[in-house]
Length: 206
Length: 354
Image (tube, rainbow over all chains, first blue to last red; front, side, top):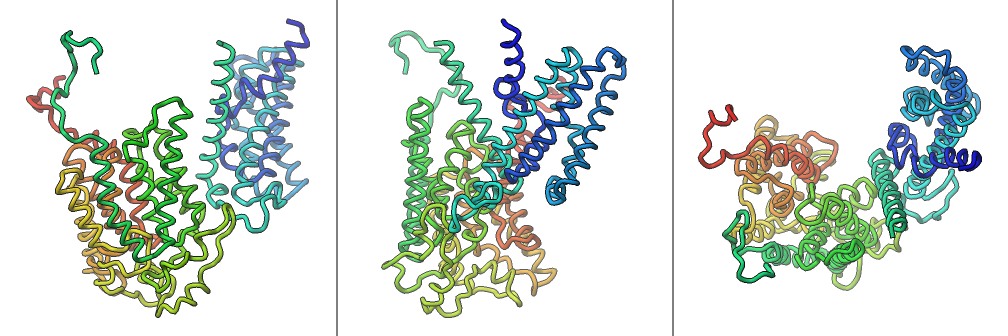
């Protein structure tokens, strides 16, 4: 396998084969809690991607000098640093968005995708590979949040990013903006992903 | 069933089979529901008829297509999808937009039944799953009531019935005002009592016969009671469930009534108003989602009756039957675990040793 191909694989597995939300079911808390609109989904996805990318890079650089016994604590300190950066950044860019996302920005610290990638990948691989892996996972997470946020906003308010899509007379499905709607939509997307995967697996066998 | 003819068959129990099959019981439930449907059409006219037909057809179609799609034999012949469709329609307001009814019917079969594995595996009553979804999705439409037995109900639909799919239904206020129905404030007996400035107690006779506003099929308490008794007489329904549920509802509301007979309704009102009767007879008695052992059944029924009254009297909603039954469904496996009857021949001590 060529190096380029291998790098591509590392990046792409976060999007499809090991998608953090639809396949690994990690980070469910922000996935369900903040995806009541597409904008919130994008913002949450980008914030998480930034933290994931920066912390994976730094951890990969420092992997040989971090003592094994305290590695988790060290990872958390590094992640928390970047989360603080994101926290202030979002506050500076848009206060409305900051209020909409609420405590879930700070809670990126405990997002298991980030710690999971640090432990499973960044601490064992080279810096460039860790960066690619983090980027792939981050983009995969963002795509998943957009899928959920888009579906919920479209059905729940008839709009996308605040622009009316389905017209004035559309009757909004209030449940989609409420927490139960998050579970329903996540379930529907998981069903779709599972069905696609099964179909692909059947095609490969045949 | 055996292809091999004369070879002796060794099978596990049960060796004796009753005459009743799933199909025959379900068909009888459909028969028992038809008078309720008929009264619903009589009281609310073409709108209720269209709603019942739409929900039933969508349920059947969904079940058929889903079975075909997953490569199984179609399971619409066991009549259970028809029951789900009829029950869903009977719990909805008569002027409910048909497209919302169709969405509910689709979800009742997919979300409430087939995702769990089809008939016999559903955790919750499928019709109530759909109704709970509709209640959360369209809170306005599902609390838009129309008067019963108005003139002209057989010559046209309520304005909200034929709403174009996915659009907002037109408000019915002007239309109701134009009907010339005296004293109709667009509320059911339960919400009149709960949200009126002074609690309004609807005439008991009207509650029993069903000449009140409400969901399409919940209004005529006496008719539902008779249809339920038919099923009980044919031993196709567990009589303990409605008995426990209605009994507990009367006891609980009786206690409240004795404590304060102004702000709390009388047990008779609680018994005959809203969906309690329909829920007790046809929803809570769903064989799959209710406990098996007699003691468990008593607990299950009493629990639902109790929660219904608590939601009605103390909660924010005027009606609580739906959530009470769904909660009862959720708890029924737990109740089953705690109330397992003694195995024949086993002693209590042996259990401790084993």
